[in-house]
Image 1 (cartoon, rainbow, N blue to C red):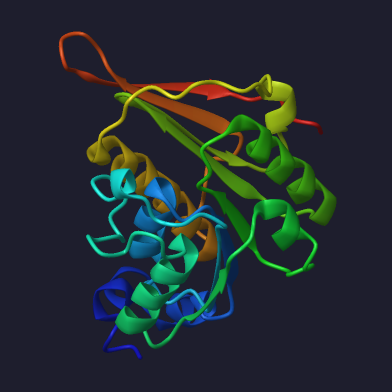
Image 2: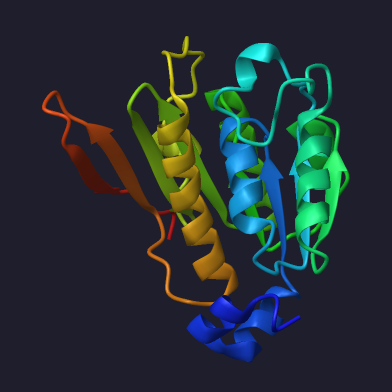
Amino acid sequence: MMQYFHRQVQLWGEETQNRLQTKKIAIIGAGGLGSSLAFALGSTGIGEIHIIDFDEVSLHNIHRQIAFKMGDEGKNKATINAQIIEQKCPFTKVVAHECNFEEWSKKNISVDLIIDATDNLPTRGDINTYAKKVNTPWIYGSVEAFHGQVCFIDKSSFNDAFKIIQKAPAGIAAPIVMHIASLQANLALRFLAELHVKKDLLYYLFFNEEGELITQKFGLPTED
């Protein structure tokens, strides 16, 4: 196993790599963010990954959702992502759940971290409520047009910081999706490896009219 993870072991040693084998995560959504997260985290050595999505691949998904290819139309997104992880990494147990988040939450599966890869505010509100109930941190991520947001939510509350409403999405291209998923994955991996993570800090990234990438940070109010 250590030869497979050679470069990571160089980064943090065998003890930390072995620790990752004891960790369990849930990725809620297996589309744009979710498939990028599956690629980023699926071969890091996390012991168990649950991928939750009721949706099937549509033609318009394929250009920006990196797990899918022509011919995958009609197949469940979570199942495809699980198969890719299984083919790439023999050291991770991966479970596909072909259901929505509410149905998954009733299964009472204990994980160390929940990662949001959904595309609507109400579901993120439900994730927040559930995470508080089971005392589990979660990582929020969203993308639209040329901007995105990421936050490791621990003591703060998404429901208090964001007004939960329906919103028609803007257009989007693949690179910003992969960029935000990469930031989520880095926060997740640092947390699971028990490295320092700045929590309850919202990162807002966008390109201005001159094409400059801007990163802003906002502290979220905490419940403690």
